[in-house]
Image 1 (cartoon, rainbow, N blue to C red):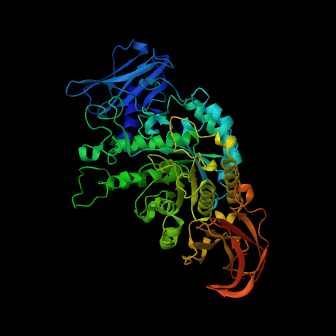
Image 2 (image 1 turned 135 degrees about the vertical axis):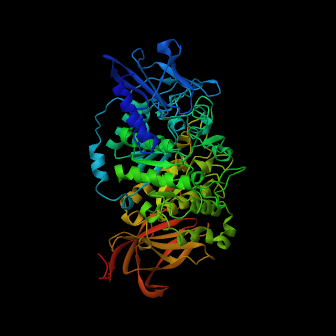
Image 3 (image 1 turned 90 degrees about the vertical axis):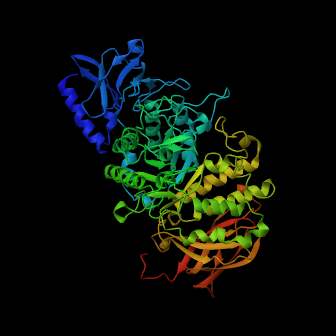
Length: 639
């Protein structure tokens, strides 16, 4: 190895070993290089406790080619002029105990299709992106004030060909992107696209963090998909798993024969619940690896957000099942995990302040979305798992008992602004015997769809951004199956499903258009409760507000299948109000053929309000009402 090459790698490794190399993929793994007056490939791997490391591959007839140790950095490197794009290769690592172990390249950009597992020589080609308009529009307004309505997708099971084969990224560009745009969603969130051996893991047990799963496509195809999405005004979010990794022996576990990416302590290293290994979040080299990976997808693929999976597993030492090792003071907080998450978010936002960093965190950990400088974790959004669990429990309940459990609906208003929340109905709610979202609703098919419309209308009106799993938008009845496509056939055979899909499309576009539904999601200034105490009739009413005083919506939700006539609610101003949305309209699958007439206010006190209107609240239905002509605006407020 030339002394200048060695010196450069040593410089890179200094940053890597100190947890400060945030684009380590540029020198680790396989990268095209011009050395010894020849074109070739430079292979570099981190294996600090290996006795020796050799490169083996198609280009060497799988004979060992010894790699050179890069000083005391823990890296091994070699230049190969024989290697070519598409060649398969591995690292053959000799442990200190003398065992010979074949390992993948953790930084490879491509792998064989499972069950094969070799790394593949592949460069990251330069790309002239054509999504500058998308980026310009992103800068125009704060992410907190914009609509965020995410469509969660599992790549392999959204659509399939008649023979069962999966769609390609190009085919999804031609089908999924137009569909999402037509339906009115703002973003597509993919469940993990990174290389993983077991389809039944849904991508959450990753082996190759820098590669698109070979069964899905390659880095070029995914880049083109993202670009096409941006050209159509659709953002892309990736599910990402920095807390734990696949335990298959050929991948990251005990990479050089010793705990390398995982903790030394077996209680921390082994994840019993998921059958995986936990990243050692106190190890600086792991910081460089993981943060570089996040930057890789952000910078090289223009993804707009990362949903960080299983954050709770990174915050608590005892989150897993089985034995655990407490801190010296007996506490259970993973301080190294906390420090890593703060560092990760700080680095990412320093490079792109508009990035969406969304935590899937299921506990009451405080400050998940507070800035790091305020002692928070630094995410800008967190999934509101408590809201999701409460509301689904409520909707699964016989309507007769809902009045006695109304707190399941109203409790969320007590903490709705403790964090910047996303309200999730994700894939996790329609697997493992939980039934589909439709199947969890009470009653016959008509009442199930009525309840589902009410549920979705309530989700859209509640403060917080939104995410819904694919199939929810047309009322899939079966549980989600990762090995089969969605039940698209019901749209041809069942009017209920077609009408419900039309309803969701209408609701999504209304959410994007009505600023009152998305502009103030982070504080109580965006909502005013009208009545949260009507347990007997089980009706909830509140006002959603935008930054302009005249721009607000009144939301009235009836959670029982009993129509409420001559129903009186307080309103903020004297004037005339009109119905904007009624979930029980015939076009959506309900029974109402015409909207109710305009509602004129009367001077009648109602709680904190001086004026009231009277309306009919449909059975198991939600009504959105907007001001048509109002008087007496508060001059002290911004009009």
